[in-house]
Image 1 (cartoon, rainbow, N blue to C red):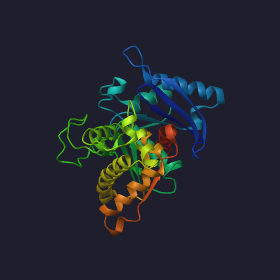
Image 2: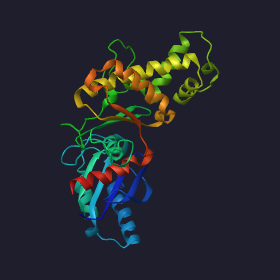
Image 3: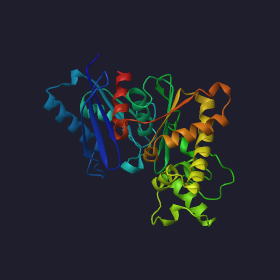
Length: 313
């Protein structure tokens, strides 16, 4: 086995890069700006930055299993994408282009899926091969791993758990164009939406009325300190998320759900509430499913990218 691998997680603002041993040790991490526009080529920027690191470490292509790339969009089995809006990409052969630019094998995955792979490998899901990563941020993202392999699906849309319909009576529209998506209730944006709605429909005393610009963190902090109004919001959030996760459990039967993203910084108050409600939605065979917090933070993507190519090589 080759000794090293690169991981490159391409985001709309920066590209996070990591140099790893194939045993899973992160040796170096750094960032470069994501330069978009007709005059720039992100993949060539990635290749140039990796070559610079190879020069610093006196390494050659022969030392590497290759590079794993994470991109913000669905990825087809041949390593191509049809569109990555945040990067200004239409149809693009990502794998072929980075291999040509860097001179080593490459593997490409959706950014949420590779983050899940990273958490399975060296993070909150370490020790398990059946893992569902749930990312609670501005939206709700996910990555599904079965028997150690990412489930990306026929169209690269596997793991888009935020857009499962959990409320057929919803009247407001999700960003995806549907109504009643999990993302409308369990994301940071959704938590604030539900909180503002509840505040408007009630005159109950709560510390949240004193907050000028309400955030999901404010709701979770108030719940942690025993605010009754916020605690009910927490329970509603947890119930809806648990219901969605019970659907996934019926299909994939994971060992563990790993919860990450900005909302997860609230900690065990979330995992405990979600697990409690989850027990009410699943049958006996699934009640042993575990819940945990992601531990790799913003590095999950580069870990997962490295693991993706190590598995492929």
